[in-house]
Image 1 (cartoon, rainbow, N blue to C red):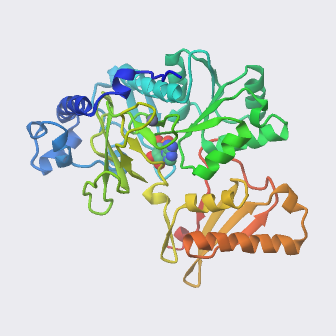
Image 2: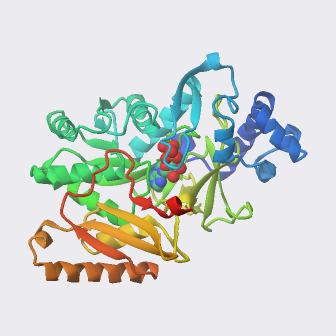
Image 3: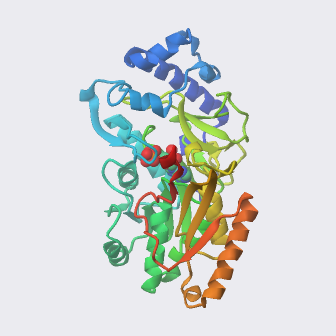
Length: 436
Ligand code: ADP
Ligand code: ZN
């Protein structure tokens, strides 16, 4: 089958050429920021830097980092790099981990972002003949607008559903024969569950692909969703501060997400020391935006933990790939001294045959951390006697202990008793903060 790309020239550009392009764009961007963002200019001056010190990407490491704290501090206009009258839109973060950040877009910024999303849709097998059901939230959140714009650029038929109203989602999916579903993985799982209840799961619907992101999800969750929806499920990554979804995207190899390097330079740093780590090492992902006009962030620390690889990809794209982020550094729970990511617990649950509906509660009793995991029983377990259910709970607790090294208290709860997510799932309640 002939490989399809949305912007082949950039997606398959040779490394030398890409580095030259990045260098040229970086030099221009640093000057743009220096001239227009006094705050960042101040950070550069503190380091004794002027734009003349940045001659190409080999000088990138000299530039100061920006963090979420800088963005909050400079809210709302402090990092705006153009006259407000050149801007056509704002978006804002979901505020998953604190006060929202507002990002500005010129029409040029919107166009480039939508092209990145169109690349992702094409990489997922999309063409102008597809019907894209966009079930990410529309509004301040970037998910809806990004994939909507991408589908338009491609010339696909767009169903601007936004999230929620599951009954209507399923009706339109069926009546209008949606072929590509775009939403968060947790909402995809919920839609899959709802399709199953109506006998429309697996191959009994018209969907062929899904583009899911905006939150961490495991390979186990991917398999679960692929089965229930009868599709191939692709990951997509992004953040409001850089544009939104489409900073990186998966191809048919499903082996990491290709970063749109003509727009974003990625680095991996040691989150403690800030030192740049070599390819393949896990650390914090840092991005420099090369083409944004209104809100161009240089060396922005995402707090997302992952690693990069330049290994050749069979899809033909030469864009560097990032591994599925396992979560952000601030999602990591430290329980009795052990580092725990919710995604590790998700892996065990799905491997043990449970649904991806769970809640993790952490608290502290008598100076010791407690870990409680609430998981829904499968319908057949639900009819079991209490003794069997207790045994299942003990088995699951042992499997989680095997993975994490600490034993949780497992609570098997009734099917459907854990609230389903229509956007980004909230899976962790950490009550220890209340005591501090
Ligand atoms: P917030 O930071 O408030 O959630 P955003 O909506 O901009 O605001 O979310 C961006 C963040 O979402 C990323 O920094 C990352 O932590 C997470 N994210 C986005 N896509 C993915 C993905 N495919 N896998 C894992 N995490 C993701
Ligand atoms: Zn690829």
